[in-house]
Image (cartoon, rainbow, N blue to C red; front, side, top):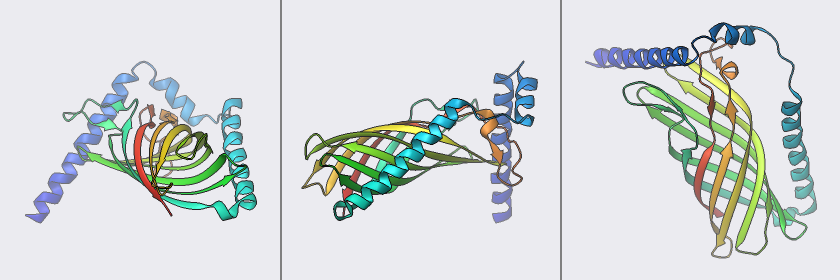
Length: 235
């Protein structure tokens, strides 16, 4: 019985991946040759891409300076929330699988305040989903600049590195720089907080790589960002 169950699950994965690949090919009909050439040809980074990386690097430098200038005001925060993608890729399999799906997200942040009403946070999150024999993960590493108009209310913006992984018959990974904005409310003396966050990160078909071989893999053009509602506590 166990052997039959393993065979059934493997067949489901193969069928789901086959449907996803067929869907991608159908949507890109008439452009397949162009996309193939783009994958094989080396492309120099665009000016915009260099600027994105420069912004993230600059925020990291400011964060370190903030730690040095106000280490006594540092805090560790733990977060849990619900993520809903803003513009997922919708496949045409029988269950209507989306990449990514909605679900619970968890994370931790090291933050520090400086210059009175400013703060910086260095954060890592983990989000996973599974549907129709397709699994996926999104793991962002983020830097956020916060502004505190009052003790209870704050808002901020930042950027970071987003890594995503999709597993079916083939394991594919992709990554890019993304951005986010956040508004929050501190409660119980700042030990408990609520946040609403919007993020955006574009993944292009040429960004997908086969995890096993490192070569190109079939994958959709998708924005893996969205809206996240968060509840957390600070130590």
